[in-house]
Image (tube, rainbow, N blue to C red; front, top):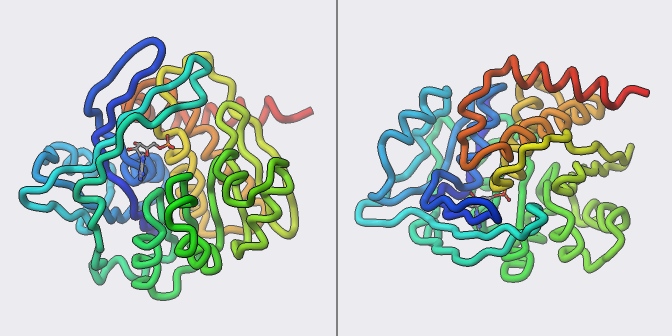
Length: 300
Ligand code: AMP
């Protein structure tokens, strides 16, 4: 089943304690689409400037990603983000954000996108996320991501969005900020009270927590020794999770738990190199093989 995603498309500059990369391909929607394309067909909604190389569009299309919702703004500049990781390789500092064409992005969805049953509103302004949701005809499952910037600066729009979502994915610090609650478990329940049927709290190297009315659980991260660049881990987690849901065409509790595991494994590959470099090296087979090891690891 097709899966629609809207979000940032970026050139990222990333500094880790060990290496630096300038202007590499990134953005929440790019990471998400690539990860989800291991499982299902993806319809991408995003915006880029004149500086966007056509070769990137070709690369996404070769993954079966529909780019008819990709807007190229003549004379415009693509979104740019610069970040620096602390020595623990988990916490990061945003050094620069240039929204550029993403700042004024107000998409009109192609007709073929509007009936997409699965929707992911990747990191971006909740005003933009709502605009996209408004154009969808009765999606079966609408899930979003958010971040501190929007929690602080577009709080009311975010609360409106939450009332209309089926699921929310966010990290631990964001969940605490959104709910004003230091206890993470309590925070998960408080997010549920804001509207969504389920909430996934990402905890970086410590995995992810799931909350719904029926159940709460934690899945650990897959232990990988090679952590080169964590950028995109959260977005590819969501891509793996939503991709698996779209592939199985279900979101009952057991499917959701499996989908979370797919997200965790996708993220574990992403962090093994910069940008999409590691994901571009692997095939579905390697994901499946890591899934078997993950299941074995968790059986006792
Ligand atoms: P993640 O590491 O999964 O949390 O996401 C990193 C990606 O988010 C990078 O590729 C950035 O380009 C993108 N990003 C950073 N800040 C923003 C923002 N304010 N809005 C949308 N995307 C962003």
